[in-house]
View 1 (cartoon, helix red, strand yellow):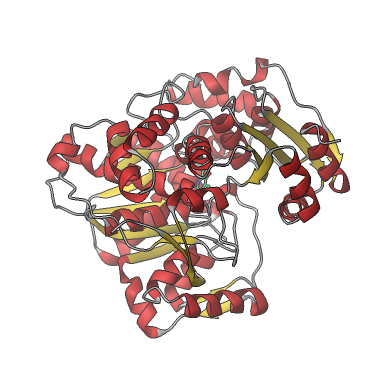
View 2 (cartoon, rainbow, N blue to C red):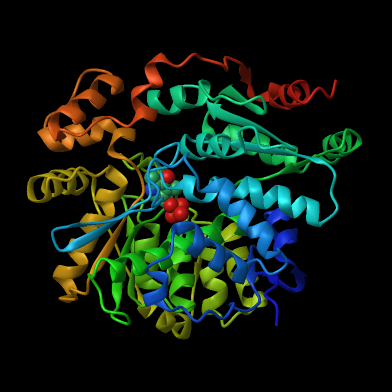
Length: 496
Ligand SMILES: *Cc1c(COP(=O)(O)O)cnc(C)c1O
């Protein structure tokens, strides 16, 4: 039986892996999920000696059934190469009694690099497989992290163009500098006079604009999306959970079969969903700990079974987790209903119309493999300081959320199963919060000066990609009003 992909909202909507990657979202508004899980005989003694690329090849081959072995190998080799600063790609380091899975050694020093470095290869391969000779135009609005990681991934990938819109004055100085200095002939960055929602809404309107799509088609182009609902981003994230367990075996930290807990700093629910799938295919995971910041819609959901987006939205020091609607949760909901698209659709319709939904008691019972809690802003700073004081290790605010929530979980449950804290960003990406946590003082000074301070404090060297930022030439200076976004796209693509 081959693995196909089916919409969470319509069981008749079944496509191949490559079609699911090309489409991104299902046309019925649902998300693609595997019709069945591939069967793996995960032999961790053997996996312990395999490289990240070898593990990735194995896992992707199982899930992406219509890709040939050769195609998968080419995609993996193109993605996980020297653009990562460590040959292990995703190192697992022991600090105190815990393990940190460092997902920040890619080109933009945050975990989205793990998926966005391979997505361009999966997409272009998927286009070839489906006899599409059109150039792929990635259009994306970003609140900071995704846009840069997507450009780094798509830079100079033949057959693709990428256009990123970001809110002028709406991203950090470091994030802005990262974007406007982006290299590559096929990368385009435009600042928008508006907020992230304005930019996002305009991008969605372009995706649904039939005349514009037709105009693109006449020029042998098609839009595609790099957002986190695409299975081309989700599946590659399963890899690092398999790899982590294999590394723990290799390091002699865990006996094959012994379980581990994972604590995941969560926003859109993509990373922790990948851990859930990893557990389903045989990685010995005990608890999936879902860690939120003050935007604790998921913590409340796990506690009560009610998902309610009618709530205040907080800007926190872990901005990549400032989310009220966690899109990928729909996939978990679908599995909790025993794969019932009708029930899933009803719940999602309730979310759109009423802003909330309540799951049944039987669905609630299925949630016991998860635990969930949140960390306040003060706790995040405490986590940064405590980890440095106790372990001489500097973590970023997102990782600190997962660290604090793990401590709360351990205190409440006495479950001291070996735990992996998923480390999603380099501390150098969020220098102000890190220094304020370490010094317990508010900081003046710009972000670049604070980067130096972290380095001094820790004795570590600043990663090259951060250190070179102030000196890189600015390559993108276009600023447009929201109403001008579409004509900016047409100009960039030479459609006029
Ligand atoms: C995107 C992001 C997250 C949240 O991951 P999800 O898959 O959306 O739950 C956490 N930390 C960082 C640094 C991120 O960029």
